[in-house]
Image (cartoon, rainbow, N blue to C red):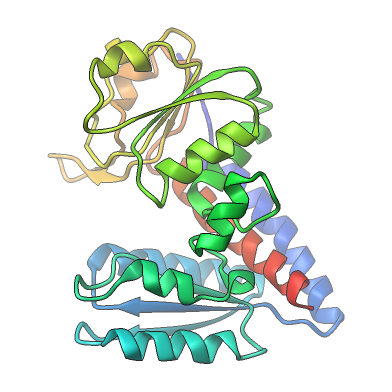
Amino acid sequence: MAIILDGKEVARKIRQNLKEEVNKLKEEGMSPKLVVIMVGNDPASKIYVKNKSIACNEIGIEYEEYLLDEETTMEELLDLIDKLNSDKTVNGILLQSPIPKHLDINQAFKAIDPIKDVDGFNPINVGKLCLGQDAFISCTPYGVIKILEDYNIEIEGKNAVVIGRSNIVGKPMLQCLLNKNATVTVCHSRTKNLAEITKMADILVVAIGKSKFVTKDMVKKDAIVVDVGINRGEDGKLCGDVDFDEVSEVASYITPVPGGVGPMTIAMLMNNIVKATKLQN
C-alpha cells in the first residue's frame, strides 16, 4: 500500500512557521494584507474564498474582500485593481476565478501589479517562472513541489508526467518540475495512447477535473501520484481525478482527496503574501 502524502499536516507546519514570521513583521511595523476580488457567485469559489479568509485569520494576515456582482464591467474591475495596486496597505491581490464570461480574465491578471500578484498569474511572474527566476509561483503547483520536498522525494532526473495543461495548474506545474530537473511530459485531451505515457511516469500529477479518471492500469509500480482534482463522486462524496483505492495498491506515495493538495494551495498563498510584504518593504 502507498504511503499517504499528508498535505494537511505539511500545510499545518508551513502555516505555523508563517504565523511566527507574521508576528515578527508586525513587530517591525509591517502588517501583511490580502485583498480578494470575487465577481459573480460561483458556489465553489465561495468555499475557496472562505477557506482563504480562515487561513489569513489564523496566521494574522489582514483580509478584505470585494464581492462584485455578475454585471460588473471590465472597466469597473480594472478600476478596482488599479486602486488596490496603488494602495500601500495592500500587499497581495487575488482575483478568484472563474469570473463571468463577458470579462477578460487574462487582461485582469495582467493589470495586477506583479509584486502584489500572490496567485502568480501576471504574465511577468509566469515568464520569470519559465526563465527559472525568482517569481510568485501559482499556489497549487508550488504546493505540489513543497509536499514532495517535505517527504524527501527526489525530483531531479525523474520522469514526470502531468495530465492537464491549464494555465492555473498544468502549465506552471510543468515549469516547476522542469526547474527541479525532472524530464517532463504534458498530456491533455488530444494526447494519444495516454496510458502508455502515464505508465512511464516516476511522478504522475493529475489535474483534469474528471472523477477517478486515473486507474491502476495507467500507473507504473511504485510511482508517486499527486492528485490535484477535486470532484463530487456519484455518492456525493469528494473525490479526486485518481481512483484512490485502486491506485494506492500500486503507487509508492499518493495524495488523498480531500487533505492532499488542497490545504497546500492555501498554505502557499499565505507564503506568497508574506513574501510580497517583505519585497514591498
